[in-house]
Each structure stands twice: as C-alpha cells, then as structure tokens.
Amino acid sequence: MTRFLGTCVALALILLLAYPFAREAYHRYEVARSLDSVMSDRDRAALRDWRGDAASFGRSLLDRCELENGRGAPACQRYYRVAQQ
Image (cartoon, rainbow, N blue to C red; front, side, top):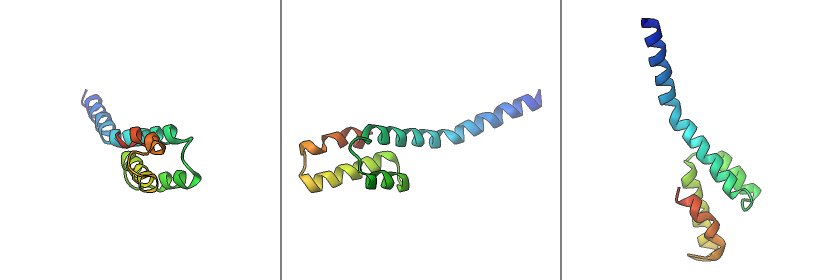
C-alpha cells in the first residue's frame, strides 16, 4: 500500500513539474502555426532561439511591425492575436 501511494505521489509531482513546460511548448506551437504563413525564415529561426515565452515573441513581432508600418497599420493586424496571448 505504501509503495502504491508513493508511486502516486511521485507521478503527481512529475506531472505538476512538467505542466509549465508542456504549456509553453504548446503556446510556441500555436504561435508558430498561426503565424506560419507570415513569418520569414529569419522569424522562424528567431522563434526557435527565443529565450522568452511565446507571447513575448508575438509582442516583439508586433512591435517591429508597428515600428516599420506605424501604429495600428493593417499589415500588423495578423500579430495582434498572438501578442494578446
């Protein structure tokens, strides 16, 4: 009985510790999937090397677009949804 409870506790602890990493991996996948058609090869490489979270990468793309095209430009609309995550 003790071995079973110990195994359950260990499994729960592993799941608890792995959840934030799995969630971030899923968010990165969502960003890559939703922006795949508009990202350049340079942007894809930057996402692979990005040290922050997926939402901050989306905000950096939005900021760069707004610097190049002006605030509220129609060309930047595709980045708003990702930046809001």
